[in-house]
Image 1: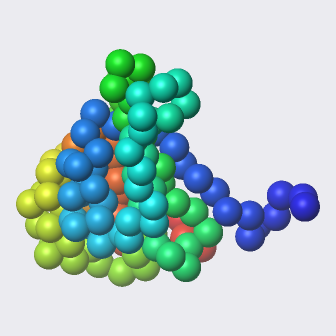
Image 2: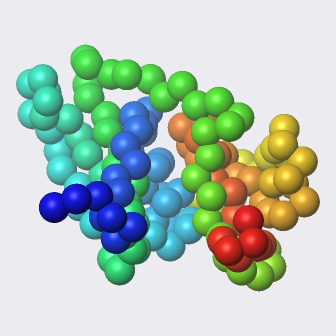
Length: 136
């Protein structure tokens, strides 16, 4: 089957602490845990957490491998942007902060004007954008 606009996308990245990541993404943001597994320590068998919205065409995969650990190396421009098409609820930001997130200013003034940026426990940035995708 060819790649289309409906093809599912997986965003995969390493994590230092899957429990902390789950608190941020599931309890803080409200994503569902779609899958989790405990690896056995052999190559290719790592601890895994997949979060997302069950009806979305994307999900976030976070991995940790004891002894084979690749540390997260996020930059200020490694962003996951969610377009809310309206104001960012302060209770959403408060929940993210209560579950391990840290509100930060973006080096890109566009994101400061049109949203709120929160770092997850691994230092990757989530932008909650007030604009709709069609106007981004």
